[in-house]
Image (cartoon, rainbow, N blue to C red; front, side, top):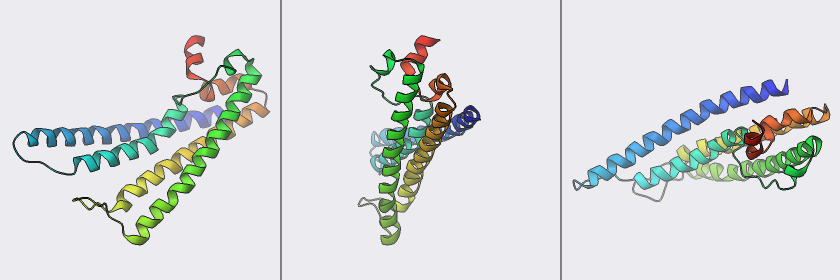
Length: 182
């Protein structure tokens, strides 16, 4: 069951990654259009601001995809020298710590959104972008990552308790080792 859950999460996150990627392509096209227009003495304006928002959104939403693709940086010198059981323990410990950090980030991101909602905050730029438009999807991305991290951790813990240590390797192991195993 745990591996089915991970497979479903991977598919969901691939869809999210495609949407985020499309958003980044649209943003790049917008910036490129603005650069070309500047050569003719005009500008769309606000491209730096919009690009910054796009990067913040891509980061918050992209983290969950990166988690399930084992793309987060790991220092695994001890892990690489351990047997399957100890590797699984290191991996689960790493996931518990990551989940704690990400849940904390998501909790700390809420006051940012809440303040934007209460104050009707706008960006201090010529565009005067209502910040709730940016903070809502940004916050949702961090919540999504926290949710994904916790679910992955629970799946890994379940496999650990069932003594299926090797199966955790496929979704919380170290990517560099995955390449050498294949």
